[in-house]
Length: 374
Image (cartoon, rainbow, N blue to C red; front, side, top):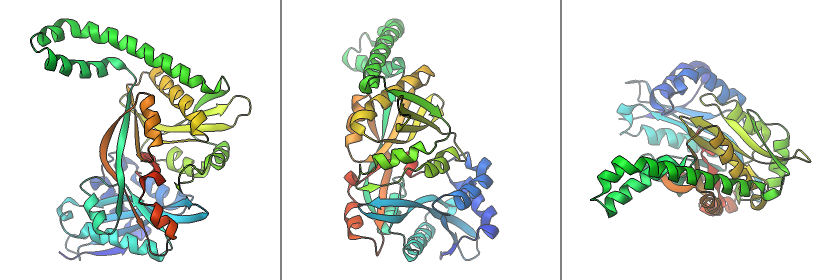
């Protein structure tokens, strides 16, 4: 079947586009917020509107798919470049085995290059990754979810039962029936106390100067934080207050919060965690500090303590890129699990040679879920 891609005309295609989103994207909240999402993506992004193409099967089924790239500024050395973040890749089920996906993604790349975009990057799953490899994207690495239980009882039971079944199968039924509850309860209490003590020790790594705040929006102090903290990775994604408020505070299908660390003396913000909550789980979308050697430990510890006090079960941080953060997360009780999503990158024709060389190295990036999925 032959397909053709065409650029989105938002005034005439809005209903078709939002129907493709609602029917084919995984986020169930999109259907309820689709009109607001159009405004957010095409009229409010401080970096400019998303670039979107639709794919047509020559009138047989009409418009059967869409793909977008929303603009994002990137810093590479002395260069300030235009990038596009792949998003809203949706194709009707009956057309997923044909060429619709390749056609619409090729149109995105061609249009981006013509507009002076230096790089495209995205976060496909394992099923979609071959499409991007076929189009010249390089796989930088697979992302991992770093999980930290906040209540140890359930985690201990998950670990202890298989071990008892393996090492002492004869007594396993009796232990499960008579002793597992008290063992897990006592072990959970002791583990929770241990985690709490460790978090409090880490929290006061800066003495008592840091105070921790939880807010729905950010202010101009976060611009100063970005300027002080930049330079930590070879490829940087600016985190200005305008961007953070657009991306998280004004987001349409989830409620994000900012947990930040500020100086008691000066009021300067030294770091933050952006997160959402869902059924007792804390999902971290972004994290940034001005000095990881000084601020990261107390911020992580205070965040875990605050989330435990609210009664949440666990924290999940999705990340791909340089390995210094994962090493620190493990020290705070996070354990990694590959999540089947991949950072893919394509440096486009005309991009600086430095970008082409750096973009495929995992050590050049520090990417969180919020940098990619919208």
